[in-house]
Structure formats: structure tokens, C-alpha cells
Length: 365
Image (cartoon, rainbow, N blue to C red; front, side, top):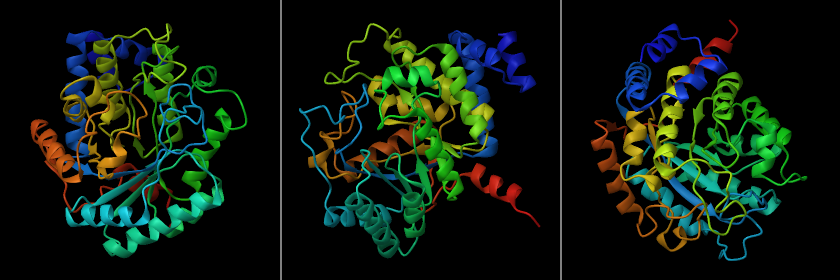
């Protein structure tokens, strides 16, 4: 226990020290979680910010080895939520005072898709009178596209790197023009340049991944100075090439504990960023998102995607909430927040404190 306490108190996080913390046993991990909760209380507070999530389309140009909506999976019924349905979801989010909206989709780069996102952004601003914070998670795009969406009303952008190790990246993705590690890194640079609150994240306990990789991931996020993070455990999909991979060494309990430690350590290392309690946590354990909130997360994303589409946005198996509608998801989120001894931050955009501080420090008087 002393080793864990000393590392955290010294507040010097080298790769070797982070590895030691990630290897902490159950008893030692309690101290890590307690310290993350303490830091969250100071820098973030007791509020949980809500992002109404629209899973816009499961059409995707990518062929990631782990993903259920990869372009090569012909068992998927492809869909795109209509503008009328999106408008209804926007109104629900605004009426229920969530404060923010997330548009998530497969990765597409066509002008038709880019224009559709732009049209949706204008609708969000129009229908909410600018009240809603807007997060996009629509994959790699050109700098021009990111700028176009920013000018149309987007504030935040989540682009998960999935792994910061290039060799590991190509074990999870094909090595071709559509899946280029350095292009993904460049996209994160574009987002910061365009002025977004920039987020990334990784899959935890994915095939071929080592504890050393995860330590590198935390240092990577610190190095590029992210404003928000969405990361969670790897969960298999039966129609993906990595299903039943013999290179996945973690059981369910280990995945949960490792995910919680990653959230807690990121909170300790990057004290004022936004961290999501992801749906994948709930998939592996009843109360998974509640555990993530207690370990340092402060964002929840109640799903407002029309119920008829939810089963088709299946990035991984056994995703919770597939039989719910928007109102059901709201009730579920309120219960999770209550169990985590927190309060919902209704009516707040929930912008990243880290982003605010980063902008202040970069301002030249």
C-alpha cells in the first residue's frame, strides 16, 4: 500500500510508476479510487453532466477488426436517422434540460454526410436557441471539415485513438489508406487547431494490449493535453475478426478493475478534464457506470436515438438500453447518478474546465 500512496503523493507519473499503479491489487486500488474521488470533488465537484446521445448512422467506411459496424460486416442493417427524427431528439434533449447533445456516427467523409452534419448543427442552434453544448464524434475528417462544423455550432469533438502504440494500432486495424495511425494523430492536431474542446480515448484490455501500452496511453493523453476522454473496456463482437481472439488475456473482472484504474489514474494525472462513464462499463457489470463515476468520471450520455435503430448501432455485443426509448434512458441515468451519490447538472453545457484553463493560459495580454 505504501508504494501506491507514495507514487500518488509525489505526483510524478513516469511510465514505470503508472505500470506499478495499474498492477495494484484490490486493496491497493481502493486508495487510487479514493484519491481520484477526492480530486474530482475539488476540481469538478459533485455534478454529473448529461449529453443526450444520438447514434446518427451505423454506415461506416472503416474496417476496424474489433467493431460490429465495420464496412465488411454484411450482417448489419444500415440506417441513418432522418432529419425529422433528429429534430424530435433535439427537442427532447432541450426540453429535458440536459444541457448538451452528442452526435455519434460511423466514419464517413462524403460531401453528403458532411453537409448533413452541418445541417443538423444549424438545427441544434436554431431549435435550442444556442442553449445546448454540442459534441461530435464522427471520425477522421479534413481540417476544412472540422472548421466547417465548428463554424456551424459544434463545441467539442471526441476522436478515440483506441491505442497510442503504432504497432498495437495495426493489430486492431488493417494497414491501408483508410486506417493510418499518423493520420489519426494529425486529426487530433486539427481539432485543437480549430478550437474544439478535444477528446480521445482507448479500448482497455483489448487483444494484444499490455499494461505497458495502457501506461503509454495515459501519458499520451497527458502529452497532447486533451480536454475530455471517453474510454472503456474492450468487448467482443461475434461478427468481428478479433472475436474470440486468443490474444485477449483478461477476464471480465480484470477488465472492469483495469478500466476503473485507468479512469481513476487519468483523473489523478489530468485533474480538471471531463471523463465519460461509458456504456461499455455497464455492459460488463451491473452498476458499471456508477462505479466509473465513483472512480473519477463525471459525464453520462443518456441515449435519445429512436428505439427502432438502437439494436443496429451495435459496436459490441450485449449493449444495455437497446429496448429503451429516450424517456427510459433518462430515468436510468438519474438512478445511476443517485447511486453514485452525485447530482445531475441539468441546464449546464458542462464545458471542460481544462479547456477553459488552457484557453486562459494561452491568452496573450
